[in-house]
Each structure stands twice: as structure tokens, then as C-alpha cells.
Image (cartoon, rainbow, N blue to C red; front, side, top):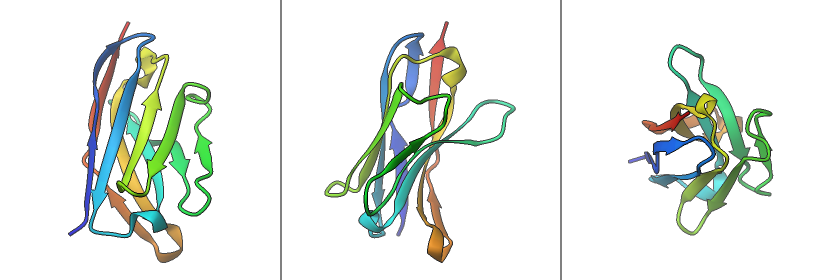
Length: 118
């Protein structure tokens, strides 16, 4: 049974930090590209950051470059998103996705709320 479970969200003041975790099970984590997305109220879901399966190369949305860091621990089947210098516009539900694009496989978590107060 595939499980993708985000945690670590919460309420933080502008300039603060949070670390999101995404714990997975039920599939071979090391073979999957892992991504964080976010969806603010009334807006489309957007890609925040991705870390690949093989080389662990990373990509970030321009809006979070220099502030957010994605990382993975294949031994723990977990991906992280370290978020620093948070801004009110970072307020959203953050989702974790596991993907094998060649096979068209995508597993999503249920999301964790991040709220940044001004």
C-alpha cells in the first residue's frame, strides 16, 4: 500500500523557518523523483522544488530560490523541504509528490498547511 505523508506545517511569522517532511512507503523511494508543490487559496497548484532519483539534482521555482532547500534521505524514504525567510506569499497547502515520469506514475500526499503571518 502506497503512503505519502507530509508533516511539519504550521503557523510562523514573516522571516521564520519551517522544515517539511514527507515520509513514504509502499514503493521503491530511491527510484522516484520527489517534488514539493503548493496551492494557495484560490490559486493553481504550483511546483516549488524537485529532487531527482538518480543524481539528486535539484530545481526550484524562482520565487523560492535561495530560501528553500529540498533534500532526500533514501535510507529513510523521506524527502524534506527546508523553508527559510518565509513570506506571507508562501502561505499555502504544501503537497509532496513521488513520480516516475517514464512510467506515468505519480503518488501524492494529502498536504500540510503552512501559514506565514505578517
